[in-house]
Image (cartoon, rainbow, N blue to C red; front, side, top):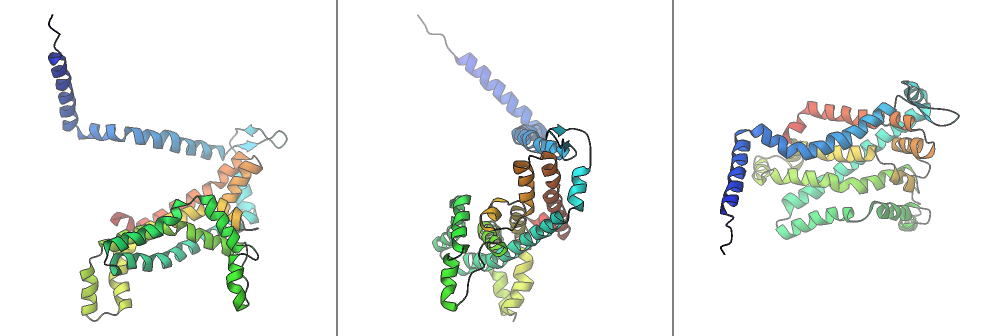
Amino acid sequence: MVAPTTQPTTSASRGRSSSVSSYLYRHPRLRLAGLLSAPMLWLVVLYLGSLTIMLVAAFWSTDSFTGALVKKPTLSNFHTLLTGQVYWVVALRTLGIAVLVTLIDLVLAIPLAFTAAKVVRSRRLRYALVIAVTMPLWAGYLVKGYAMQTMFINNGVIDWMLAPLGLKGPGLGLAATIFSLAYLWLPYMVLPVYAGMERVPSSLLEASGDLGASTSQTFRGVLLPMIFPALIAGSIFTFSLTLGDYIMVKIVGGTTQMFANIIYDSFGVANNLPLAAAAAFFPIIVIICYLLAVRRTGALDNL
């Protein structure tokens, strides 16, 4: 008895695969749509869909007696946020913290990235420096938060280090919050700046020195304009991450509050979803305004 052959079936399947491949090759837009369908479904349905529902909830209210949602359009939540002085104080404090954290990380990232990209000649040592910068990302967020708390509490590590000088640390509060957030987000600033530094030809820096430019002139006139898009990329990370943080300030902030704490407390403590959703407009609007301002500089076109 002769076994049935599978050659015709195999040839037919190969023919169909070849025809599908040829059809997709002739229609690049359809091919692109097929590649992006899964991630776009995730983005539109799960992320943008939930964000839209949250923003719609900002125009609802809660029953003062039962706490149930009242799904009737109202601007009362925005009126509460805009007329409450405490919300303005917390909003300005949050913006100040985000700007300070970004500037601190910027000042620390430039020499670190320059050393790794241009000063160190050994490739292994260069990679070792980059890995050392990313090592804080290996630890858990809460682990780093409570480690910072033990440093800044009374009679903690900071007090112990300053004791020989007759000084005392700032303790838990605003300074501890800024320091901790700058430590947390530093790798997100260093890595883009390092990538930007690597793309700058060393010959340009050497030519600037040969033409008589000082180190500061070379930095301002040659290096800084070329790494400006990388600085903007890093600032987007540090600024936005700081703007939305609410856990670290609870651990090391003492009585200090940031705007994300208002969002969290309105929903998790007061069980007022509409007020929390209305408060969420603040970081969204700030980030959009920041991106629009950055876009006007042309830095996003060169990323």
